[in-house]
Amino acid sequence: MTAHIVHIVHRFDTGGMENGMVNLFNALPPDRFRHTVVALTDYSDFRRRITAQPVEFHALHRAPGHGFGWTVRLWKLLRSLKPDLVHTRNLAALEAQFVAAAAGIRATVHGEHGRDVFDLYGQNWKYNLLRRAAKPFVSNYIAVSQDLETWLRLAIRVPPRKLHHIYNGVDSEKFHPREGARPAFAHPDSIVFGSVGRMVAVKDYPTLTRAFIQLVRQQPERAARARLVIAGEGPARKTCLDLLQAAGLAHLAWLPGARDDIADIMQVLDVFVLPSKNEGISNTILEALASGLPVIATAVGGNLELVEEGVNGMLVQPGDVGGMAQALLAYLDAPARIAEHGAHARQHAVQRFSIPVMAEAYATVYDQTLQRWR
Image 1 (cartoon, rainbow, N blue to C red):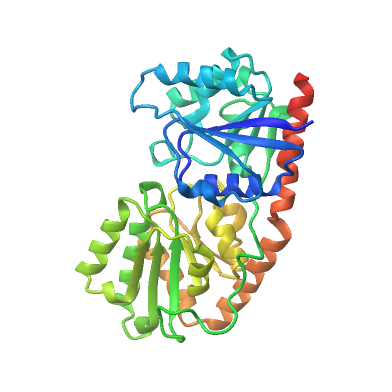
Image 2 (cartoon, rainbow, N blue to C red; image 1 turned 90 degrees about the horizontal axis):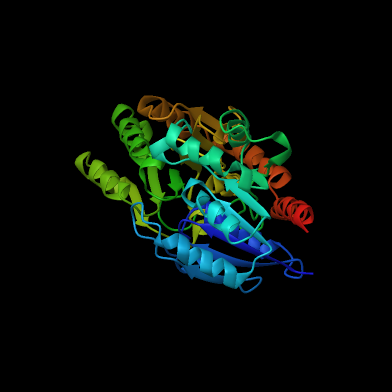
């Protein structure tokens, strides 16, 4: 019997959570599970990355604010779709658990993938009141990092029997170490520091940009080979471009906007950098590790579970421009360190973060939840 799972998200667009969903849909056997995605607002062409099976998408076009018209539309849609299980993700979709209960759906899962800039540490009492109110309606929880699992247990008081920790997986065949010459952009002797992601406040790309500028200004002779790449779109892109232009260093950087060829972008880089203010488990860090890149990341959330100081990368405090500049400098004249940490990074990704292992863990949670209510 094939189980029908309806996945409810705030929006399905370019992002780590959506990338994890695509990997899951492409890996789970279609004879065991079929999927429908409901976006409370809208969805994008990112859905076209789902190739293993047809997945139906619905958009409710929920308006900003506190109107409840979307709940009626969702209730009607769920009654029509008749799912066996509903899976919501993150705070922005959590209210859908109440609607699912009203529609008579008892088998439910809620996933926590990370917190946004408006509640970095999960301490907002209003949000946590909502999370606790939803607990009786959620059969099982999935946390993508140990940090989030601990927070759900201690702050939201989710019973341990309902908690499941599942790391995201990464395609270690698509993302692999560079072989041969670097693709076009920088001289083969350059050291290219770079990042990939949504250029929004929580990712804090201006800190990386300021650190790169500080590196070049403080060590102009040593930094002559340094280059910066940030691939992604969002409000912070203009901020970063303006910073580089004002410093007279725009010619040393490439900020191409949104890209679909992320695996190719990784081949351009020597060191991956993620300056975010908080993270669940970063898909881009996993992709960088699989690409054999050392990772400089902020010591927040799930980053501490992926980056081992002095083994496959370095950790700095969030917002610390000087500390990040020093981390960049530590790799600038150290090709042996880049090679050593990159080799450990690749090994770490292949051994711990396989997509089939991730998919089977999700399948186990789905099966347990369905069996409880059948």
